[in-house]
Length: 86
Image (cartoon, rainbow, N blue to C red; front, side, top):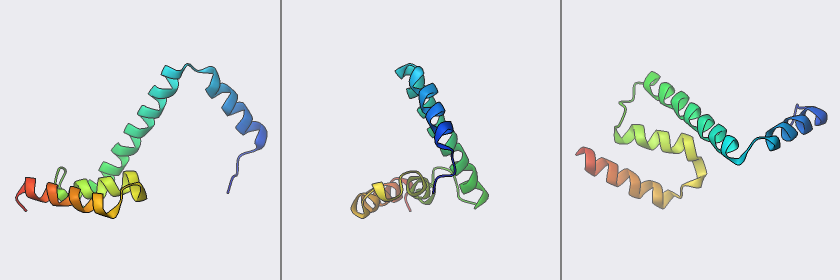
């Protein structure tokens, strides 16, 4: 679904391409940081302890979703649990 007018989308694209590569990279990094902060706030609201294995797993899942294979996810979870002594 796309609710953006084609001319508005074209204008945004033109304006974005006028920025330097460095500016676009910084914008992307800033957006990623902002999204992680929102996820972290949500996890705190759910009562999860920052830095715990469950926290890290939920942060990973909400940040990367299906980009992480089930096998990678299990290896990371096992490592985090062993690090925390759980």
